[in-house]
Image 1 (cartoon, rainbow, N blue to C red):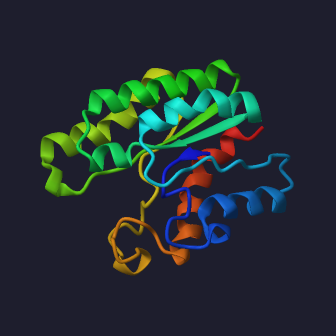
Image 2: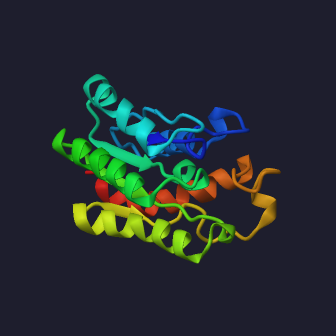
Length: 177
């Protein structure tokens, strides 16, 4: 799991985050995978790219879930830069033999229609280009429900983590052989 605060369980106990719940589900389903949560709050695609090679060498993953880009967007970084970093992460992961699930993100409308459209479309474009699985938005089905988010309205509450996991699981399960 290469991600940012959304996967690092920001603001809640790490054991209640969706990545910890994923590990529990894999055990329940008797799937022979272990989960390494290499998510860091505040991380950008550049940070993830810089950390990836060491993580691949150390953990030799069969599957890499990439949940990065939100912080790039919140900082207004160029979408082209984010795409280049995510593309490199995907390529390095696949070259190591790992299957990849790319988790997309959306930006708030105050970033303007041009930026938000380009940002969101980058994930679909990367998934098509690199032929990897895509979860367009991890908050699908509950993003508009205030009660599922912390006071910042960006980070999901502990109660929302099972919903995130279900969204991830739908796209991840086919990659687990």
